[in-house]
Length: 368
Image (cartoon, rainbow, N blue to C red; front, side, top):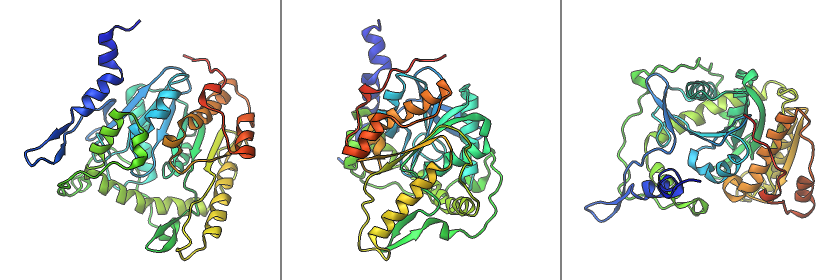
């Protein structure tokens, strides 16, 4: 049994104390944010460091790729659940939170190289179950294409797809339409002077925390308040957006059905699109495109399942039980070497809009 000291030093009380300790009042009376200690490890990739947080035990190890603007700790609710039955690693891309800015440009290939190298330096062994949320969806697909022997299965959480549109100034812009056909440079770990983002002044007053993140534990809320104020993320995300168009255009130009072979795959899709009727493309058409795109993701593997959940885009925060259960289904399929199948839990989602809680997930043994 853990002593009280171990619980405080290693558990949630310690994380909360460290995070809250990062919130200090400055002389101006405004809330100033100090850099908190990272909960994970900073891995040196040869000139820049990547923050990776791994917890739990068992194989296969689950690895999460965040959406744009999200951080490793935004997956705390899912990570705590998944770590009960296997090992799970979350991380911050270069330029996010504790991770240093990395080599430019921030293409899928560059992100994949850094994650692969970081996991290897930590001694984390694949093949991995990859989880990609939103922007992270096509990133993990590219990882699977680049490192096929190191991928055991995938979970795509309301993922971006090839024909994805985003609302920009009243227009529904298809992301890949911005592609210029620019060759994607080979990834590298060495830093060059041009890779360092230009310094920019931090905002004088911290931005309020979005209500969505108030569902996170207090320590993770404090982390988010600090991380969202760091200016290095701006250059990273601008480059990620720019180069994402090139990769999505390449994916759209090549048939994708079956590219994952028989890897276990679960695609999680939000039930409602939530599009505005004030865009230049009708909301009904946008929703049909969304459903078609998500169905296309399920066809990436012949061993897949598409699950519709009655939650929003950020279901890793809104519905961590359901996301953890989907990850558990893929972990089980990998361990037992069996088809992903369709469970009664998923049938209940479609029929009644209600999904069973994480507590009902069949027990998963931890494997060494």
